[in-house]
Length: 142
Ligand SMILES: [Mg+2]
Image (cartoon, protein in one colour):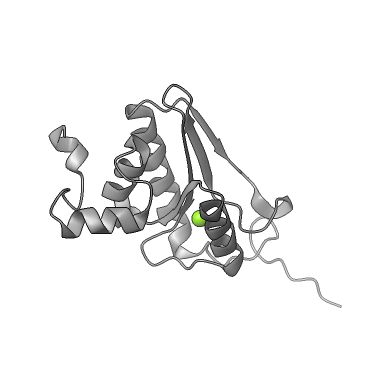
């Protein structure tokens, strides 16, 4: 039997899925924004392999304002697993602020973190009504 090396460290040489890198940068962006608007506590599962399947990527809280937000982060074209959907829907059913967000949702994330809205549905209604700008309105200081 021949043992073939599979890469420098014996692992598959297949690159990580393309959206993996995007999600890392996206996560940093969300955490930076959370800190900017006053959040001081954030939980992130670094290695989800031994955790409950589908639990959201980020749990961030602002004890001063009593604000708790669960976010499942996705790359722009990332897929959501049934387990991830179940967790987000379950948290929402329990009255929590929980959403699946991709980089183009930065405005929504800001609105969720600041308490402007509690859900994507409210955010979309506010957009339709012209009450909010679609992206980055926080940069304008509103
Ligand atoms: Mg994710």
